[in-house]
Length: 348
Image (cartoon, rainbow, N blue to C red; front, side, top):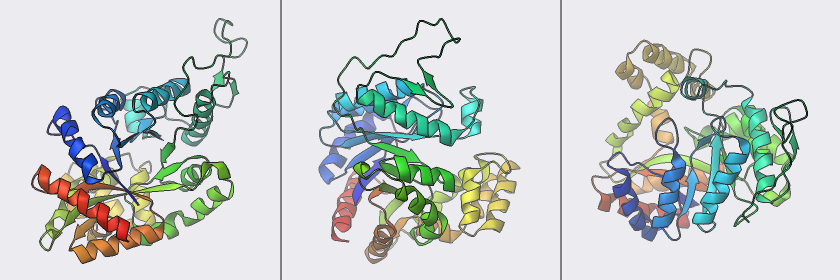
C-alpha cells in the first residue's frame, strides 16, 4: 500500500509545505490538496511541486463544475509538467450547497458530466485535435451557437504524460460503478473495510467488468486518522465533529450523500438523528450521536497490534493507497508516525 496524506495547513501553508520535505524523507508517497470553497488547490499544488522532489501530488478534489473540461485538462497537464510527471488529477462532483451556493452553477447530471470530462481530458493529453459531441459538452460549439468561428484545436504544449492518472471521489452506487469503469483511482469517504463489499462490491464489480485493461488495476484510496500507542484511544473523538458535519450538515434532507452512506452502513436511526440535530443548530449533540464503531473502524488509532489488524483489514478489502492524518503533539511525532505506518504497510 502507498501511504498518502491530505495537506492540513491550518497553522500556515508555507510552514506546512516546508515540513513536507521531512514527510517525503520519511517515506510518504503522495500528498492531496483539497479545494472546497477555500483558496484554489492549483496554485498550492504548483508550489508543492517546486518544494518537493519525489513526492507525488494530487488534487483532492477539483470540482467538475468550476472549470471547463479543457481547462481541467490544461491545468492537469500544467501541474504534471511542473512536477515532472508526479501529478494525479482528483475530481469529484462536490454537492449542491457548494456548486450552486458558491459557484452559482446548476448542480446537474454529475455522472454524465464526469464521464465526458474524463474523455475530453484524455483527448487533450493525447494532443488530439479536440472534437467532442456529447450530451453535456460540445467542442467546438456546433453551428448555430456562438459566432460560428470555433474550430478544433489541440493543446500547444506536449504534455509530460498522455495518461495522467484520474482519481474520482465517489460513494453512490452508480458513481462508483462509473469510477471503476473509467478512472485510474477511486476515493470514497468514511471507508469501513468490513462493510465495503456489502455497500460497494456490486457496483465495483459491474464497473470493472467494463473496464479497459489498459487502465490497469483500480487504485482504491482509503482514508484514516492515524495514532499509534497504548494511550491514544481518546483521539477517536477528534473525528466526531467532522463526521457530524458531513452526515448532518452537508446537504438538505434527502439530498445528503454522506447521510445516505451512513444509512447504507446500517446506522439509519443514527443518521437521521445526526441530521435532525445538526440542521437544528445542535452541532455538539449531533456529534455525540456519531456511532463509535464508525469512528473506530475507519481509523488507525490504537495499539500497534490493533493498527496492524486494521491495516490488514484495509488491504484485504482492496485498499491500495492509504490516505492518513497523523495525530501527534508535534511535527517530530507526526514524522515518526509516517515512518512507522510506512514500515507496517510494507510488512502487511
